[in-house]
Length: 324
Image (tube, rainbow, N blue to C red; front, top):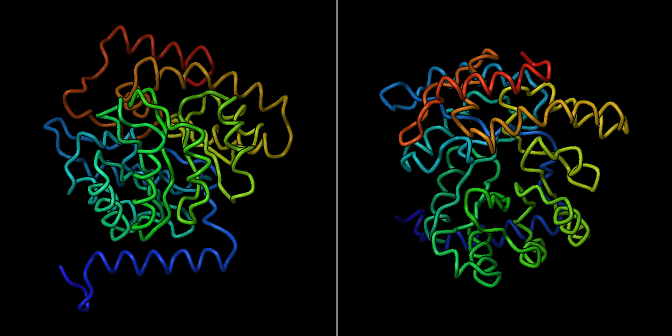
């Protein structure tokens, strides 16, 4: 495909140079601080994307004090969506999202070429920035050198800023701190979402990148307070799909130095957060969304709904902490 006589390759290179020039001249990068729910993708019982239910959720999220939304993250079941569906969902969210909120779209794929292409499509669909998960199929070869090369190529080509995404629970691969530090120098890499929960690691990344205008987001509400206390600037939290107001309140308590109140709220969020992440995962998140007035919808196969016993255990995790 040609654009005004310029190849896609040249377009990416020219745009990349322009972006780096603007960023360096401005002296700052995109501010991604705040709370983001990684929104679920509702499906109908026959497995189609349920856009009507998605629209209902977006109307509710629009009134929340979120910094923005993450679309096609892990909780969006992105590995089960086609390329066209991934882009269409982002486009639909962009149309409904208030202009004051950021749209962060997952664009990670296994190959560098596919990730570049997906990032370009997400940008065209309206994303403000892209969240790029570590490629992981050939885990044994995904060392610092390989990952630095991958992310550098993506960042050089992406027309919008990128956020690194380390989620070892799903990829069995943690983006090494030394790679994060080196990548933080790239003007089109603005931060990282770290879902591992290692506060020592998060502290070290904040410390090692603090001169680069690089931001760290906690990847879970379960350690949000701890991450904020060592310099993280917000969080991408699955629990915010359900208890969005409370997760935002936790952030504000921390930012205002009300640590005792923050600690008590953090305690009450740990068990329900664990339930919808590590313990039962996406089926639990979707079930809890239904309880709190959202449209969770079905999961896409091979994911299956919770059993009756699991539903009762999930309810107990929310009820015992006063949320139901």
